[in-house]
Length: 63
Image: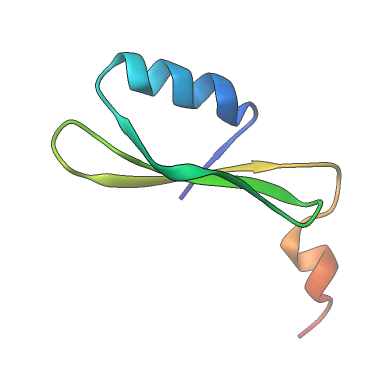
């Protein structure tokens, strides 16, 4: 999974180079927007855009 700052921009740029969005861009609570893309060679890539200032570690606490 790759962290990006603007998932919509990255998806658009990768689609111009032959990548295909698998499913759709989804939002997980108010923390992340996530998606999967399949590249021209068939490799699957996951993207995540963090929303706001909370990280998963902030939400989960000290487990």
